[in-house]
Image 1 (cartoon, rainbow, N blue to C red):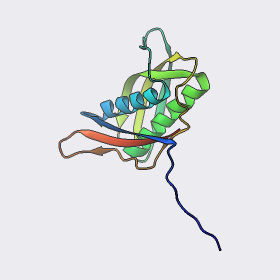
Image 2 (cartoon, rainbow, N blue to C red):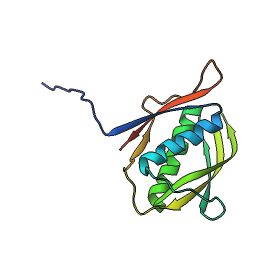
Image 3 (cartoon, rainbow, N blue to C red):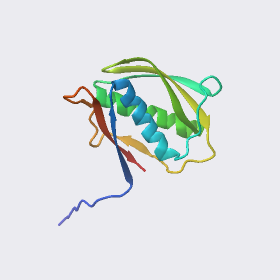
Image 4 (tube, rainbow, N blue to C red):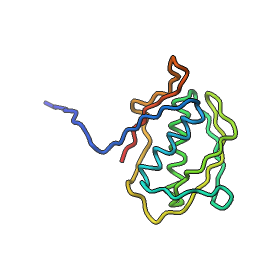
Length: 138
């Protein structure tokens, strides 16, 4: 006989982001993820720091945000940088194109392993503001 028990796990961090626009929601979500990676984020000078262009397409806004953050997280780990400068060039329901500016860091405060789809939902509230909840696996 097999028994399976689900137990709570404390290796996740969840953030709630609220914003006036979808652009601000993406900026806030990126800022939230970065503050998990590094609590003290140095200011990014977009004219002097490394940049990369990111393009992401997805079936909906929620997948778009999670995929966007996941791509930046991968780049952060590969280059050991915090990408906190963001210039959105184009943003639609299922597509984003942006320039991301980053600065090198010696280490991260927490190791974010993944941006999860668990409980994620980008929604426009009745008052016209945007909100999402994002769970990070650490």
